[in-house]
Image 1 (spheres, rainbow, N blue to C red):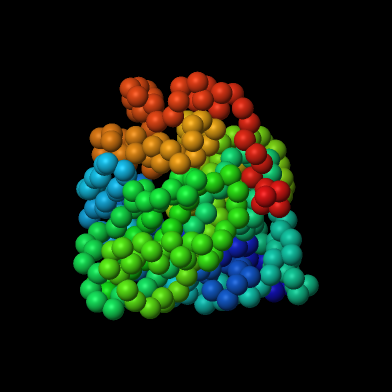
Image 2: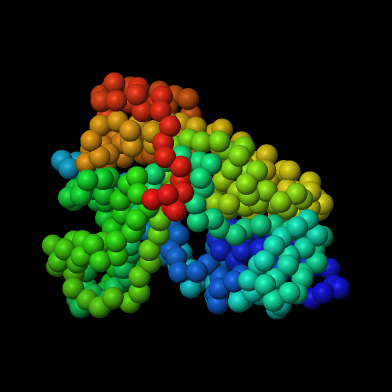
Length: 393
């Protein structure tokens, strides 16, 4: 593509980059876009889920383009306590993400198996030496770690399986923490994707990003066996996601900044610090970019960076919760922080996940019996966590 300028080049075809491309195409179909992905398909091997209350109508409309699985409620379980929530829950597989974007975006927009070597304000350099010139460049590449930030890790292995008999599960179990904790905050997440199809994920919060596939697979075996679910695995998904408890966000932005290039997704800091959810913020950012499609690249970069700083400020309470969860009390009691949330009214739980807690919500969450020792919480709030750097693990 040397010598030919397009309107917008997006480096990275994961969730954030794909949604930006779709939102831009819906807002201005005449724009010439390039969505550049190093892998064979968009989105990798992932499953993204969200609560219906996470998104405004405009966001739900953007995601309506994808084939999703939807439920009218979900369950949670903790030791001595369980609850069915009436909030809608949704899930999107990366295969359906890729299929929809391949269908909806204009021919030639998606460039698979193209490694990005570098980005700048005027284009994207590819690993094979070619260059895509663009009026505006958006960096949606992910990151492996974030040494300027502090915290722990959410580690998981998910297994999709075909059960030998109908499993009988009517709705998702978003968090089953009524299981052996194994020295951390552990829970099992289960989605009924069909009458004889399940997605079962073993998840835990830990200081280390190490992922032991055999140990987590064995835990899933035991969990399924206890519930009488037998069947053949279809595929697997693993992940190690940051749980952010603090750090220098200005330094984080500087480390990932390229002058004149807008940075989105996890690379831009658009994550939920405590749950590691990204989809609601990816949708929000995509819609904001689509609304400002006429901005020059440097102006758009400044706008997106300012939105990231506002998101960091807005989510400070969650980082404090994370410091208390990791730094106060015994690791096996960390689940109590989530149990506390789920004893609160449903609208507050919805705002918790959407990162829209009010001042009154924050006060209510901290009133009454705390989920961790008070003195331990005070000490934790005054200390720094380890850097979110996988190489240091």
